[in-house]
Structures are given as C-alpha cells and as structure tokens.
Image (cartoon, rainbow, N blue to C red):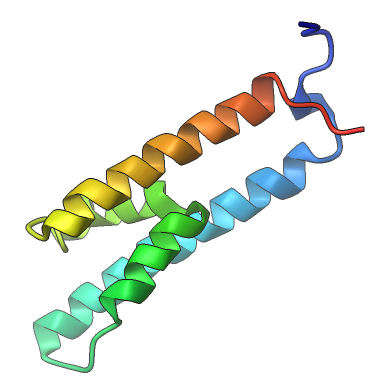
Length: 103
C-alpha cells in the first residue's frame, strides 16, 4: 500500500467534502424545522424524508439535530438508523481521505 499521496491532496477531496458538509447542514436544518412544526402543530416533514437525508451523507447533522432539538430520539428507527449511517459515512470519509486514489 502506497500512502504517499492521500486523497486530501487531490482535486476530488474538496467537492466530496463540500457535498458531505452541505448534506449535514441540510439534515440538521430539516430536523430543526420539523421540530418547530411539531411544537406548533403544523404539517410535518415525512419521517422517510428525514431518514433519507440522514442516509444520503447527512447522518452526522441529523444525529446532532436529534441531540440539540431532542427530536425523534424515542423512535427506534431513528435511534438505530441515524447513528449507523453516521458510522458508515465517517468510515467512508476517513477511507477517502486516507487511502482512496482517483486516477
């Protein structure tokens, strides 16, 4: 294994990290908006939408929102799925930054 040029030095790392950053901020905001709607009794964001935002590169933001807003913390699917996605995404990002090569 050659570790001489990690991905963070390549041109691909910035767009990948930007997507992850955007999705995590987006997920955090979705959970916050849903919590505010729940407090006001308004039409809510679908749970499927919240879970999909977690699955598609936004799990760390979703997990942070669950803690900050105390939202969806009692639902088993959220308690299991969001941290699992966060773990997988963290491992993926670390793998990209440390070992992956493009071209």
